[in-house]
Length: 69
Image (cartoon, rainbow, N blue to C red; front, side, top):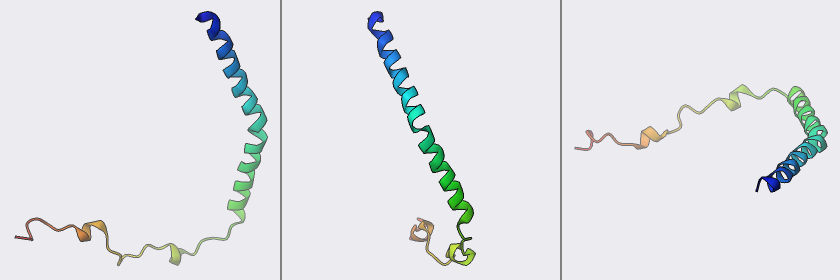
């Protein structure tokens, strides 16, 4: 079994290295594009992002067992 283990580990290592080497430029380009889009995006409207405080929450729907008696 140990005779067959080395080629399998070697093949996995070569595959991981090849994938890293092949796709590294693409991942770097995507990261650069995301950073540029975040820098150039307009600031969000703080009023639109404000949470609605009058919205019902889960606790509003739960009843207190003592109050139902």
